[in-house]
Image (cartoon, rainbow, N blue to C red; front, side, top):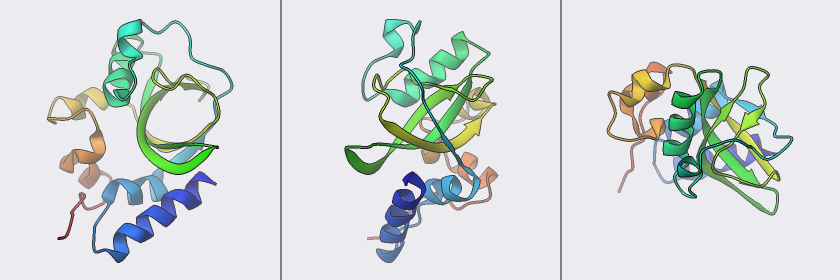
Length: 145
């Protein structure tokens, strides 16, 4: 389901002449993830809504057993893929410090060396980091007017 939703959004942007490297990277190199239960034991300062990129990056810094993931998620009740970041444990189970419900579909790219990229970027979200997207072999996002 989520793969098709991301593809549909990518195709829509392409028809408008926009290059969306993050979408294409997730479609070609990403994988889907499942979440069984709400995440626990995350410090409150890293659970703020609408700060998923910041939250996930800092949770990884606190717990080196987790891996940062960037991609998209959507709720089953609102099938619109939203840019999102979360973490996964060694078993591949989602540990999402920001989303506290379990009715999400997730698709993204594992970024084990997230701090290498964040140190050279002005943003927490890596899809806005030109060198990260290019390292995956895709063009950066370009909005055409």
